[in-house]
Length: 211
Image (cartoon, rainbow, N blue to C red; front, top):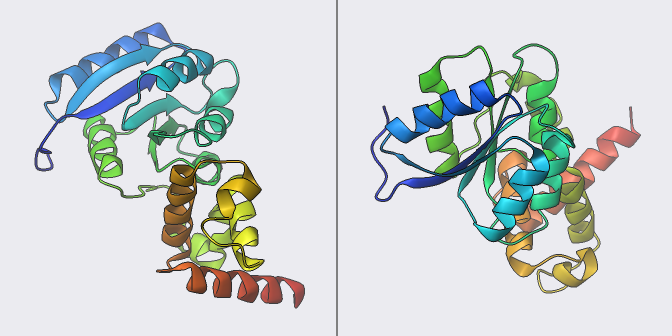
């Protein structure tokens, strides 16, 4: 188990299966690294609670009723104090990659070890991206595909020369949300600043046009 944080990590869980939700709640309740704030059986319930009671990490089933995890993450990422999301689902297929594109910070397989879920949540709360089932070589070949729709729009706005002050007005989001998206863009593209992100964008556009 990782070192205990200075304060428990506020966490919210969501799953449409009441048995799964109860079992997960007990797991997080027993782990001193976490403080379970709320649970929900639907994406809409999670959204309503998260808007009123901010948490650091949200753990959600990819196929969460009714609108699904992808839409939930997209909606919440437009708000201030949005949680970092850990998605869980089937290990096979494209779920992990789709979760990353939606804006999740971590993915765990439904069939994985319990300790893996708990440790992933702790690492995500510390600011890390945890996607153990994604082919790293594929992501390195074209990290642009890992950006969410909003992140791509922001990167395009940066490439047009918009400043950090202009971005909130142009994209219709808050300054804090701009900072959150920029941090994710830099991390996903493995760059350190906006100049490098813009350079990466143009190099990617050139490579795409030359294929």
